[in-house]
Amino acid sequence: NIKKVLKGLENEENRAARFVCVISMTTATGETTTFKGTVEGEITLSQIGENGFGYDPIFLIPERQKTMAQLTAEEKSEISHRRKAIDQLKAYIEGEEK
Image (cartoon, rainbow, N blue to C red; front, side):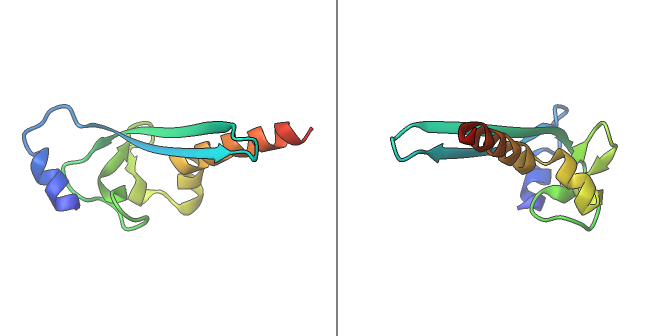
């Protein structure tokens, strides 16, 4: 709940935040490999932006000076924690096929 997060951080100076996506793959032989993607950011003082979902309106990307909810779908995909984890999985699978 966004309002609960903002209320809980009301007097907090350290507003550092991180989105994390972890994907695990287990092969038929039982080998498990894990892939992790992260996006570093900060929690804003209020909701900004209309795009996205979840905590996107309060998750600021400092390098872009925009929240995730202000990014276009293309911009968000470029930096997405999910995209980073999926790209690692894809590279692993493609490497295994060679």
